[in-house]
Image (cartoon, rainbow, N blue to C red; front, side):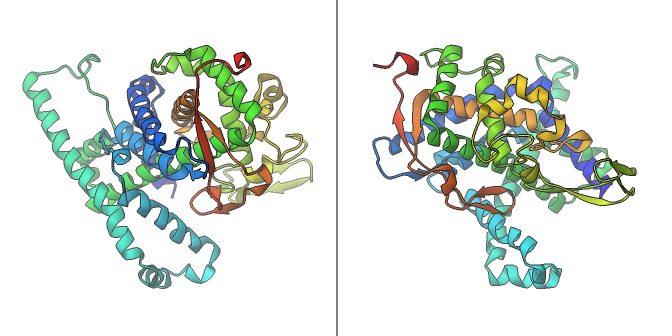
Length: 395
């Protein structure tokens, strides 16, 4: 298991190299521009719409372009079989966690056929197979062109951005010998985790801001201060100034951590001083962000939404592992910085163009768990156009 994790970590590391993040911003900006355009059809409507489908398509396009160099353009298609297949597989596959009678592979295989999952998986595999085929051809063509043109491999001006699939193809050439199924599984995993996590967090964050309009105004005023009233695209430098927005995103992840619990195996004996206990090496422990994040001794009024929980003063008062939405330590989420940047661009672009509203209250949100923690009653909102001026100057 450890070998498999290390292998996967090595594969995805190039995608989340912090030195390359600024090269992703043209993609972040372009895909969010399309989102804003698509949302225009919801303007003026009194009936709420669900944010999920809009944000899922946006983030699927972003992860495919940045991680695999493939322009999927899901947002420009009225119906996306792949996005729908992801939702279906997540819902049905995750039911295995809560139904012990589905644990045996032979029974689960029969269950998949009974629920029609076999056809869903065909749809789920069709797109990654297409991506791999096309990107293999592009990779071979680029390699041949580089060889013919004798491009210096160290020439940063000419060297194209290395993406996830490039790493897979290079390892294959070096003798890793991935099967077609293994290649596809890696691509599906990247597309699923990369889009699902940003989508659900983005939906929850915008819903929180809709429920708390005064906090939304404060976020918008910060965005206006940094970006002004024009249409210039956001840069990586701009995101560093969106401090309160980041607090809102972190508070969203505190309330609704994507992974409410995860397992870790102890590598050494661990002394629990509060109970005078010692957990022996090799023990499997359950760590639960959903529990830790709602401890009143760490977060006063833990079920309320308060971005000030993440101002510098309050963060410095707490243990660094009091917030574990991205896990922590060597196995912490390698994509946390990428995800935060992507979310800052998404939420700031959204709020520059639209104010977001909802009739529901925090207490109305019901949670469910499939692959990640999500709202069982969706993310219902309405939107209104912005007039591009600070909220404190409105008449």
